[in-house]
Image 1 (spheres, rainbow, N blue to C red):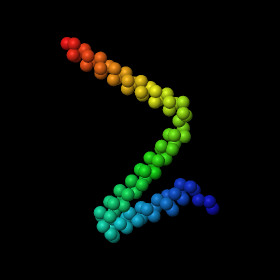
Image 2: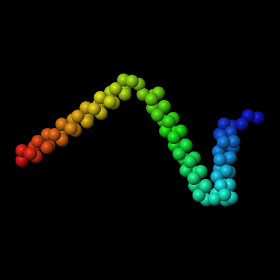
Image 3: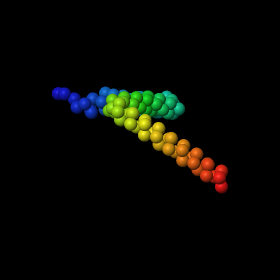
Image 4: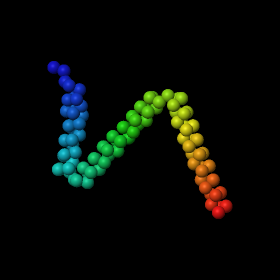
Length: 93
């Protein structure tokens, strides 16, 4: 009988981690449990962040990136010009 992929992940990957965290919380020390939980969160966040960056880079074409950079640069320059004009008007008043 072939195992379901979700079952494989839950039973063989996630469940041992949960059991180990339970052991740390109940048998070792609560602070060690908190540290282990924080480390798991950091590692998971780094992994998902890197995965997101890779996905973003692979799905975005070079032309779209150039257009986005140019529009951001134009928007920034327009804001700077507006601020300069406002300052000049205030000086005249």
